[in-house]
Length: 493
Image 1 (cartoon, rainbow, N blue to C red):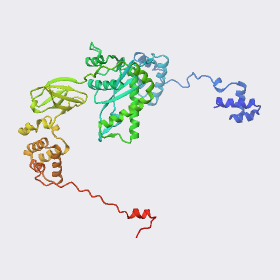
Image 2 (cartoon, helix red, strand yellow; image 1 turned 120 degrees about the vertical axis):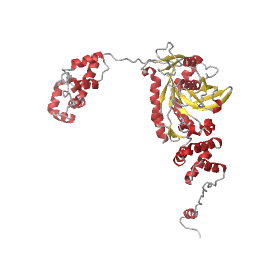
Image 3 (spheres, rainbow, N blue to C red; image 1 turned 90 degrees about the vertical axis):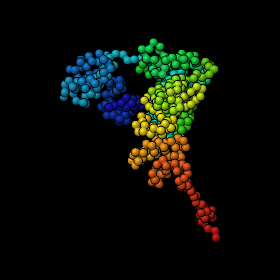
Image 4 (cartoon, rainbow, N blue to C red; image 1 turned 90 degrees about the horizontal axis):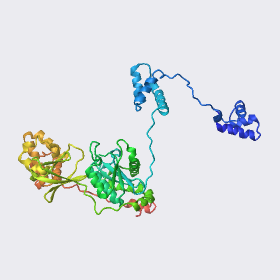
């Protein structure tokens, strides 16, 4: 097929008084084709007629009215669904390879006769007016803390005018996580925008059946800073597009930085948090000018930060446990029957009795979980060893795999005394030291000695001799080879 460029070359050579056959050869076409375009005096694209007729029979012509009827009732129907329907109604009439043909027909119908599509209108942003935030899951990046997968989210805060952003690690989309992340961002920003936009997150927005649009705690949080809340419509993530787009850029930046780092494992959460903040600074480095415009018009911060913990009050059960946010935690048995006050934070729970802080518990995420500390109840388990066998939270009473291995050995070799023996060992771990007790168990297994309570007691008390730490010997290097090198291979006598 001759191109416009070839014909232009033909006209150029003819204009230079070149021989017609030579001009055609230089333009890369036959003399006959050259004659055609010389007579027409036009380029191929100018004389090409539009192809608006069918070259083959429409195989869906008989069923097309029915297909259009379905699409007019429900324009969201996919071509694959309609194709499966046609194959079921007339087996053997359509082969799988004809799906693409139907998809093209439906796409053409939608573009020429179908309903109009939703129009997205670009918005003009003004400095200091809107900030937006949302949560994003980070597990897909495979970050680990000391070789264990770190399941977490990131609270993401963005100023829509300058795109200045900041992040904070959290573990659920709770109000505590929202409040903690939002307040960290505001105080790091150093000022207060006029409006805050969020999606339909349950920590901020009530269900449609609730007469109040926003939750009371979220409304109180924004009232404290003098910010007007906004929410997007259900299923319209594009309305919070600034933060949604920033999610993708941020995750991509984290992924690339992890590749450059050569490892996605971190020694601690604080180390990982510093890594994220460094990325945040890099992303914000190119937004300084517009960010300064925002800062100049922000409202001042209030005198103090709002307490973002959730106060609760509960009674300690007979099992020495409390239930907080659908999860079960143990407290010391001395508190059984007493009412305690709780301050539920994003990642921990403080338990108060009167004016004294009696427990500081790591908060579990999700529902239906339990965290039982054997130190809280071991004193009574020693007195009631029979209760251990079918204890509801028995799985929590093995501090490590070595303790579990000890219990399994006792069950196999001292069936009747297994529970009592194990509880005695657990009592030593609580009263003396869990590390010392575990090291004693390790030594007994290595020496193929029975891991009984009496043997553990002998090691803990120092009555049983244990081997000293392995002596480390560092061999000194022979310097003769170095001397030989310095003297050009000639050894000194």
